[in-house]
Length: 320
Image (cartoon, rainbow, N blue to C red; front, side, top):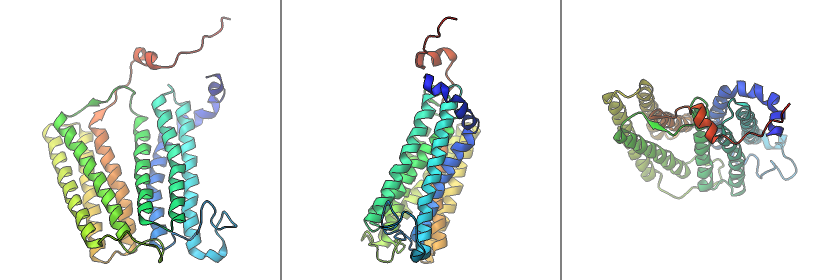
């Protein structure tokens, strides 16, 4: 503890900006999906043909690699932005008063997830854009968004046990909606692996029939929209907190917009601008899903007595 207290003046400015820093970290992790899409849609997946270097001789792109090298290397640079935000959030969690272990551990989870994401990104390059590894790379982004969202929301929550705000059947419906949303995202990744935008003209596809897997994806989307609409009506029927009703309605609107983009891109033969918008939409649908899940419960602030029983023992202060 003394060492941490010694650095507390350094942590205070980060603690004062902890909420916007956490939001920036969340937004940046969603943005990583968009920049990754730009790499794939411009055939720049092997713009840097090796990893961790960009070439065998250089860690940075060279003029000979052209625009593809710039795009791929630019996506790699975003990792350093994410790391910087994660470190700032960690410092902010350490400087938060009162200091909360939940915030510290969530900030650590975000921080460790980013280099893991970078390693998987490197493996995608070393495996020449294997579509299953590329899919794992995307799903890790979804996992990072989840942890970053939890960190952002936890700042305004207490450390008490989660208390439900709606009846158990509606919580079950919310969980089922969340599972359907995750399934839509996962199958969407498989659809992408069967399509034409591989990230490089020589990259292999997963070998699945694009029409068949797209139909499975569309069926899951209809299921998700149906569950989300049902959840919205159910929340209104039981007079759930307004924040929960708004979150469910927002999810329905985002899903409908995402579904419209998906259908238009399919019937217009996957133009890159719509594919990029659909990739962004996947991140937004998942974030909106998390917002619904969070709105169905609350974490009360622990009383000073309860907090004292869970806090680490303080070192005795020498008598004057």
